[in-house]
Image (tube, rainbow, N blue to C red; front, side, top):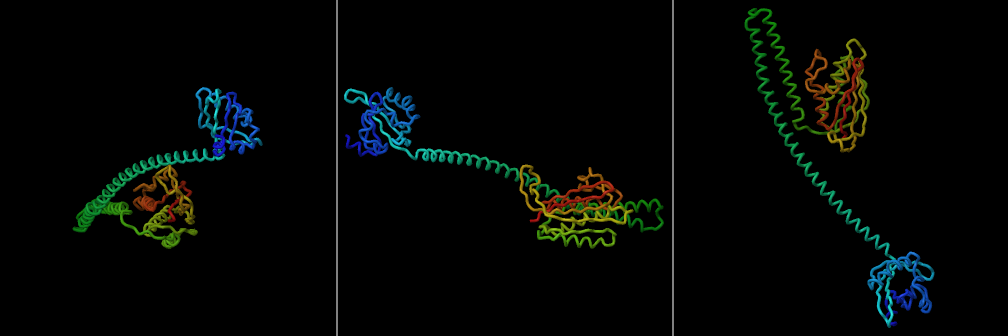
Length: 392
C-alpha cells in the first residue's frame, strides 16, 4: 500500500482521532517540503494556514465526525516555507486496527481563482446574451409596432393625397370654368348695348368682373399650392449663391439695396428653391417703409449642425444644414404673429397686393426639402426670416 500511494498524483494524509498525522505519501512530502520523519506525530495544524485551521476545526472535522465523510471542500494548506497552496480535498472516517482514523486526499488547485473567474465570466456572458436576446425581442416588437403605425400613417397620407388630387381637379375644372364664364358674360353685358345701363349698373358689372378675376387668381394660387409637391421633382446640387444673384437682379429698379454674402450649396429642386426665395425677397421689397429711401435687405448663409428628426422629440441625429438669413429694415409686424404669417391665405396687411400665399408656399417648399423656416420681427424695425435646408 505504501508503494501504491507513493505513485498517486495527489496528497494522502492519515490522521488519528485527535487530528495528529499518522502518515503521509511522497506527494505530500514533496509538495510541502518535509522529510518522511518530520510530519508523523504532529498535528494537522502544522500544514494549515490560520484561516484553514479554524475552517478545519469548525467545519471539516465535525462533518467527518458526524457523517463519516466530507467531499469537495476547498482549503489552503501551507508549505514548510509558509507558502500557501489552495487544495480541493475529500475526507473519510474509518476504523483501523481498533481505532478511528481519518483519511484525507487532496489535489492542489493553483488555478482555482482563474477557473472560478472563467466560470463566472461564462455565466455572465450567458446572462448578458439572454439579456441582449430579450432586448432584441423587445426592439423587434417595437419595430413591428412602428412599422404598423407607419403603414397606417402612410395609408392615411395616401388617402389625403388622393383627396388633394381630387380637390385640385375640382378647382381646375369645376371652379375655373364658371368663373371664366361669369367674367365673359359680364363683359358681353357691358359691351352689348352701350348706354343701356345706368352708371350704377356699369359700376356693378365692373365690381363683378373685378371680383371674378380676383377669385380666379385665388383659385389658381390654391391649385398651385396644393399641387406644389405632388409632382415628381428632380433633386440636384443647387448653388444658392447663383439663385440669389439671379433673383436680386430682378429688383434693380426698386431702389432696395441688397447685401449678399457667400451662400452654401444644398441638395434640392432648383425650381422650387427659386420660388421659395423669390417669395421671401418679394415680401422684403413689398413691405419696405415707403417714406424711407434707404431700404436694405441683408442675405447671409452658414453651415450648422441641426437635428434631422423634426417630429420625434426623443430622437437625435445631427447633420449639416445650410442656414440662410434674410433680414430687412422694413415695416415689420408684431412678433406674436410669427407663426400665423405662414398660414395659407393669411395677410397681416389686407390692402397690400397678393393673396397671402407666398409665405405658405415658402414653408411648404422648405418642409418638402426636410427643412424649416421661421420668422422674427418687430413693428417698425424690420423682419428676419431664417431658412434651414439640408446640405445633403
